[in-house]
Length: 585
Image (cartoon, rainbow, N blue to C red; front, side):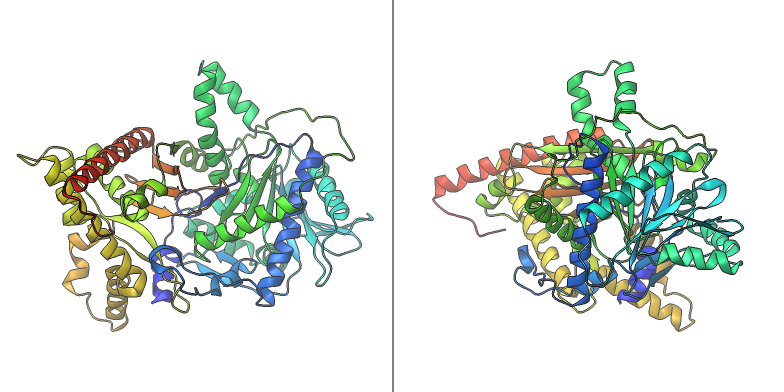
């Protein structure tokens, strides 16, 4: 069912990729004293991705195994082969997940809203993206460059098949790109913004572009790169100034900083900042900001977030072993200046401004406490989200939690649903909507809801979930050219797939924050990471929806978790009285 799932989940969806589809992975903030530090950090990404790619190509990447209720099962490694070969191609019909030859040797570097490319070559080639006239520029650098309309530069770094990339050579090329882009900063068009468009619109534009053979060749060159490396200039100083003008307190600004960094990584800040400094069609994009905002974006159709998170965790371990050397070649500290671009692409700007993103770092307890209560941490959090949604909206809705199916060959994901009848009874009891509700009855309802949630989790990761099954039946009916069965035409089925609460657990111990936008206009996106004594949530919604608000949802979620802890204490007191320990939930 993977092929039809891929079409249904991603490739047939015409919504723009930023916010609506592509997730972000925010690294702990880096401390760059100069652009040299930035180049060295970017060099570490290039070096590590080279190692990781070699492991993929030679099939020596250590095997992934399941965790939690799927602990110990070996997992399918197929989508790792997409890391450096995948690009989503837009179309007026449906998108195509293009997997190119694995033997390419170049990456694309985006800098100041200009895309650059360098590879093993003896000269720099500049190309106009409209006429694609080729201009030979005499240089001694080992790079190739694509310079689109109005001198919008694009340069690519090449990697020899068997040689480890040397730091000095890479840093020098990145330095060249950084300062070369300054010359074109005022006049360059923002080619990367095309990838933020509606997929059908972008597909039409691309089809017109590739009518010229040279255009087709050049776009193919970008789409077949290993990945995009995005070098951003400073942004946080300008945003902090704007916040100070609103007289926000220092504490408020500090609390807002993770959300600001996450938002910037997710969409680039809009046309006034660095949204044009991306190419959202490419599976892997690494963002390195002058003020230490660093992370990764991925195009979601090619692989799941958990595989990207494994890559990032491995990279951070590599970085720890090979830290940036700040002792040599000291430079004077660069000035912290933001960049403003005039651009009339109002659609991109409005979508960016519509995103309401909040980071909740819940420090009262984590998975250690939940496990001590003999409960499943994931089921516990899913019920907390159900309770929160009910408190805010006075109803439950279709909810989505990504369930990995990689224990099956070529398996991707299914949906762990949490809006059960048992959950509804429990949340109503917690909100005192059931007459004569006692603590004992709340505990009883809670235990039933937990048991049901664990049951759903187990059968879904075992391939027995209803969502993919129904999807397969629907697509089989379509292929038989018959009218869709009544079930799939019912309003209830459409509501069944209207996920106002889209969630995902992405565990890491390295301080990485993962997030994504809502999947429906009046919904929430909610990723979470449960560590020993902390739970971090990234909550998103749209300001344009009068029904949602990320900050209020986060505040209510914090209250729900505290309510559930209090319920656990009461449960423990009851069992201490009767001297009986409950079975694990």
